[in-house]
Image 1 (cartoon, rainbow, N blue to C red):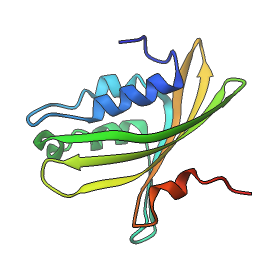
Image 2: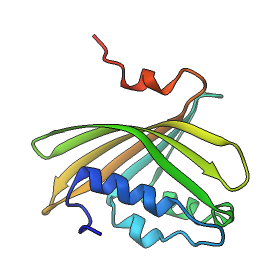
Image 3: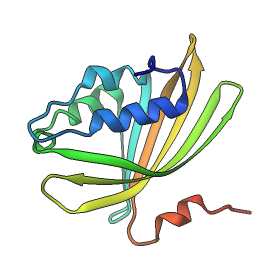
Image 4: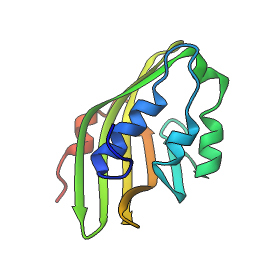
Length: 143
């Protein structure tokens, strides 16, 4: 595996690999921690009730140790668009996910990155779930 933080695309791929677990697996929160800047902010928007919840990195990592992940979980990328300029970058990524027990889900991740101290860091991650609008809308050009 490439050194952490050498590319934006590499950080995104590493995160997907780390949050995907086989049944009985344990989330490697230390590996996930290395992908994010210590001051990162993680936000989820629930379109069903318009709830918006943001947490810092440590609280996010604690969430990932929930027992429900030990039953197995997989998240995979459908499409990604990355824009980079002068040490900052953003990415839109459509995804699908499946817990061992539960329906398949899909949605969009929005990442923001910064290049600092010789490497790329995830500075923020915001995601939402698709409620039937179709993921193609996420990648549609806007005037």
